[in-house]
Image (cartoon, rainbow, N blue to C red; front, side, top):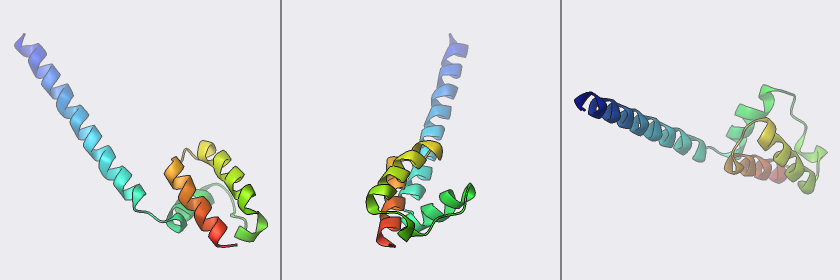
Length: 88
């Protein structure tokens, strides 16, 4: 019984550490601007088109597509789309 309690407490502590480290990482992402997220994510895979190459509606479609492809959060992609739309 004592061994089970130790295993349970160890697992609980590991889960708490994982949760807290995830919160810290999400705060870092939350505080980033659209231009920072754009620079860190978009040019990893391809050359970035000029913001004027696409309309606002097209940027929204591109953002929806790239959210899935690049595994970005809705918040991250919204910031990137806002940046691209404000640049054209």
